[in-house]
Length: 263
Image (cartoon, rainbow, N blue to C red; front, side, top):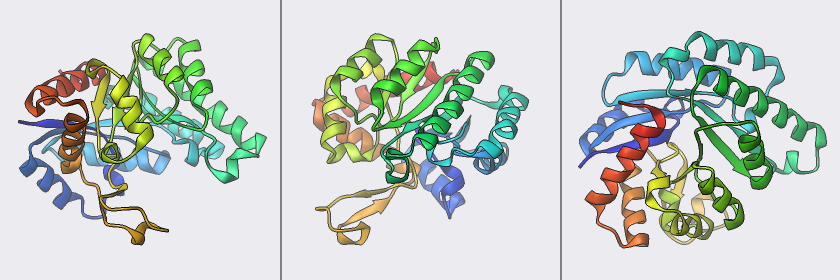
């Protein structure tokens, strides 16, 4: 049984070669490495070109927490220049959850401007969009749908069910991470969504807990995710939905290939 990790930040992994080797040994056949800013896009492009096993697929974009108007044009130009090497635009989106954004209208408007610029580009180069959103799920969905985006994935979705229903009705996807093992919002969303609209990921190298939460990262047991941990996500999904792992893996891989055009 093999799996595709549909969302990892390979450029953030300190021991990339070991992580990729571990992924291959675990049965990972492909990884979509997503980018968060101009430097991240450049580094992930280099990784895609130089690392051949497992298959590396590339997404370029600017994460809302990295919204930088000074780098916007250069990042957009980089996407246009290398569009034939990309599988998606991302990750892009809106995040008003951050304290420094929540009450700052200028920062919100900057996120909106950059988000819309990348959505316009996704349409122009005919690539799917990988969406990050927290604290502004309705606006984010309305923007994606209103701009006529045909293919979108709301990665690690943890928002309300009314927005999720609209996401699914629009034909979009959501994804689950290893946090599915314990996160109530993620479990609610994945429990509702049909498997045909779900993909699985690791969001490597995010820290996920395995024990009870403490006051900070060191207050509970956990692990820094690598692409091999997509099998943890599979296990959590199958326990939640009471479905056979091999059957679920087949559907998840098919979803990933369809969405990212991997065939």
